[in-house]
Length: 468
Ligand SMILES: Cc1cc2nc3c(=O)[nH]c(=O)nc-3n(C[C@H](O)[C@H](O)[C@H](O)COP(=O)(O)OP(=O)(O)OC[C@H]3O[C@@H](n4cnc5c(N)ncnc54)[C@H](O)[C@@H]3O)c2cc1C
Image 1 (cartoon, rainbow, N blue to C red):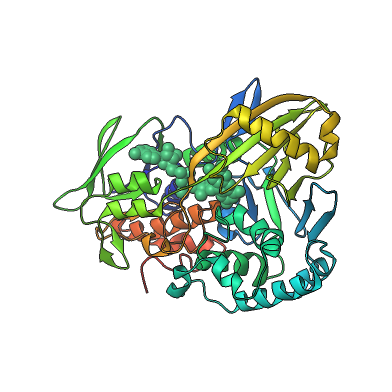
Image 2: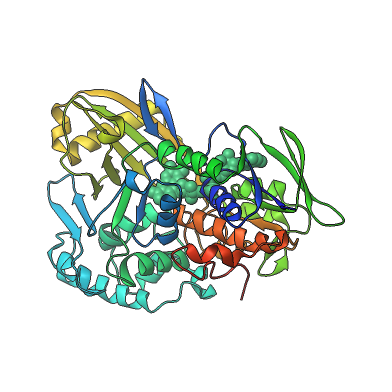
């Protein structure tokens, strides 16, 4: 008889776990509290236009996320740069460009750095020395999670200007914390995997269509094709183990029974759903309330529609400006005449409590200074999206609060971008966690994870599901 797996949560982690388990032959039910799939990646309709809750990008090194796009048939709706190429704009008019060459790492960035106008000769040398030192660090070394990336950069005499021009430019958007607050462990992972281990890891990709279409809607079709029973508006209130094995899952739709369960919800929700004694941290039982220590870091996005073309790039980073990254998403809206710019503000502690008016007063002039063509354009729409708990706070000490997929209860697994994937809270982390959770639960359904998991890019994935 086919054995049943229930996946709680329809974000990228839950979708991945459900698809993988179904591909391995499990009978899968996916319970999602909201009326749509896609979790933290979604779109909403405003004035007849689709806007995303927040600009999302991925890198070439996000191998499992790119596999996921293929699996749900969405790769064709994305763009991936041939070569990393980031225009860097300033309010004083100087522009720089971080474009990699085809040379092997770390030489692939040497030409760009030698021309990068925001670093002095001595600054370039300091960036080079710090980069080579970073390449020798092991992100899994627990000592790296005891210090901030900023304090480590200080050892190389890196100035505040160099930190802004190089390290925070990349780090804030990927880690959602500045170097001053981010754990050295997660910074090492990001810079090594993206920029230092290979020459093409940081080539940037993004969606050409609204996120809902890219992920949630495409995944719904893929899940239905894989015979997964998807139940939306099904909020789960409790997961309980049964004495003889298996679980009951209480949701809005009633009580269901399952042989295995994957809890793929944000860490605050997981803390409420985990049965007593299930959570393992460092292979030891832990009280789920400790997960609150992962905290949260906000992201704010500003969506500005202008009445005419104002920008010639697909995106750009801002330096010396409160604007971090600006993306032209006009194609997303199918705009013919006007332009839609999405401004992404990560680690947005200073912005999250500002009103729409305050954000408008602060950021429209900043946009005019960064992109002069906006000065003569009319703003047709200004919309703010705020995600107060966008990601967990990847500060020192966070690594030991991230559990692996395996729990103390056979058949019960955890997934979510906040779990111990080694990655910051990204789409790649979410997909990796979903694969790991499927790997952990399949044997308790008498299914062989080896039947499907080697089809993922890393082959022997998942590398780790428990502490070695
Ligand atoms: C504004 C913003 C910008 C971002 N930018 C990027 C980026 O550029 N690149 C990148 O890689 N990542 C980015 N991220 C992070 C990325 O979106 C997330 O890490 C990832 O999508 C998380 O996926 P997940 O499946 O782990 O969790 P979620 O997407 O949070 O999914 C969890 C799901 O569980 C459901 N749920 C919760 N409780 C219950 C319950 N009791 N019962 C049933 N369902 C429940 C929720 O409704 C949700 O759908 C960004 C995030 C935000 C918010």
